[in-house]
Amino acid sequence: MKNGFFRGHGLGNDYVVMDPKELTYTLTPKNIERICNRNWGLGSDGILALVPSKKADFGLRIFNPDGSEAEKSGNGLRIFARYLHATGKTKKKHFTVETKGGLVTITLHVDRHGDASAATVEMGQATFKPAALPCTLEVSELIQQPIDAASRSLIFTGVSVGNPHCVVFKPAGESWSREELLALGPALENHPLFPKRTNVQLAVPTGPKAIFILIWERGAGETQASGSSSCAAASAAVRLGLVKSPVTVNMPGGTLNIDVASDFDLTMKGPVAEVARGTLSPSFVRGLK
Image (cartoon, rainbow, N blue to C red; front, side):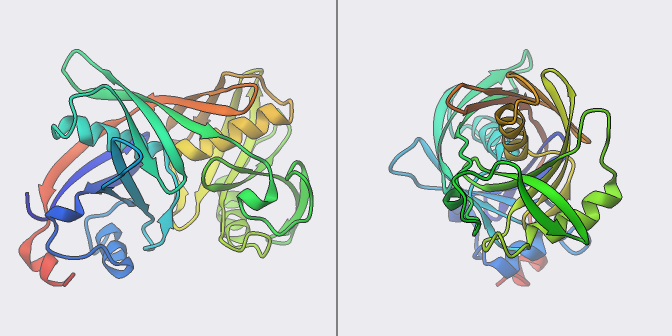
């Protein structure tokens, strides 16, 4: 289908999936930004593009709504997997996908209606080394490091799960406000310590195997849920001894379950929904050329 799209969401974190071979325009940063605009375009937290891969069954490029490119997205991978199944690009329930943040393995969970309404994704291994984010701090690990942002002195844990994350915890029993997220999110995302910017999670333990997080995504801003953020925050919480695995990660958009192995290999399981399929109008496409 020329200029077609598939729209889905994972706990309110929505993506549009496209096959560049079927487009009559190019996914330039400017075009991506226009398509993702919720007032002037289709509206989306990003675009997932199907690309060839020599290492996996499928290749995936992930674009943020500001036109920049992300290495990995847990919700995006579940949406991409549902797209592949729903559009007949695969009949497999178990396959691999290559991202810029590494190779992942996905298992689809098909419901009684024949829909892949949930997926388990082997997200790879978390690392706390500064070079993996990257971060300019000269330390062996980014565990409980000081940082100043938005006129506040904070302690963060830096972790990469194929893409960079800055996790800030409050003690159990306390909470983060949306106002704090809107202030600290952009300040931490663009902090000089992170030359390529970073994703941000404001987290608090809520039980022996549970945490709650607010999310500020690099290049996207506030989001209702995030798979890679859930993985990062869960691995940081386990590393700090705040919770034990498996970790239930609660977010404004819903809940994901993250298994953190002893070597910090991460497995994520969560729901995924299809919203719509369609084509961009000829007049809108003319504006993209």
